[in-house]
Length: 322
Image (tube, rainbow, N blue to C red; front, side, top):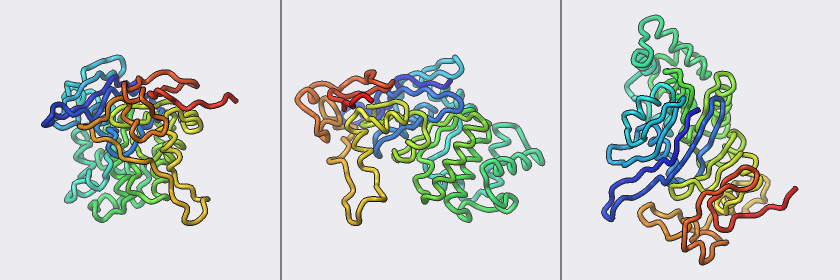
């Protein structure tokens, strides 16, 4: 199992340390999909980068990691990078931006195959073709000679995935892997990731703001707000019976294709707080219809809730027993 406990990320600011990730814990088993969900700016990507030792030099990272029984301090970014570098692949949010524009697909793959697996010549060429076949890139011989700008968005995403799999990782961290793709391409990429989980036992940490997407694909969901997890649990339980008002609001804001024309889309009032200006007490309080004086006094702890979920709320939603 791959596990991270109490991950924190902060950046020095004019008024002191600005915390952008506040005590996030995640465990991931081979073949499992765990999703981190939340609005833009909730700290999802920063948490992911901190786990892999990839935050900027200015970032102050805390927490602990464990991989196959070996534990380490996440403050040691070099150690995080070394331990996770071969076991954990990373699929960046912007596939096009993660590819070097003046490198062909072949050069991208051959360079990494040489660095991570010591392959060269015909062996490297054969493995490059196998990886592209694995991620279902059509016309592989032609694609190998192409540059990123000659590929569609879906093909760039598949090439980026092939690069993430070069080191034969047991886990894959995917940061918004479908954000720039249309509906059909989005389904294709997620089907591909599901296939890798099923056939190769790949553990998947999926970072997304699309609760509809992850509800269909993830085994467990953790909802983040203002740098911390406010609710977590099995996907079907969390989606059907959310306990936190923020989770419920995210679910209500999903577009409904069956709604009458010109029906206004539900939205969440207000804006997420700036990390440097978190409100007192519950950070979701200023946007929550259930907030009262108690919510302004103390931030709720992430505590056990029914059906194996956890929720950080002074007044969680209550569902009738079935």
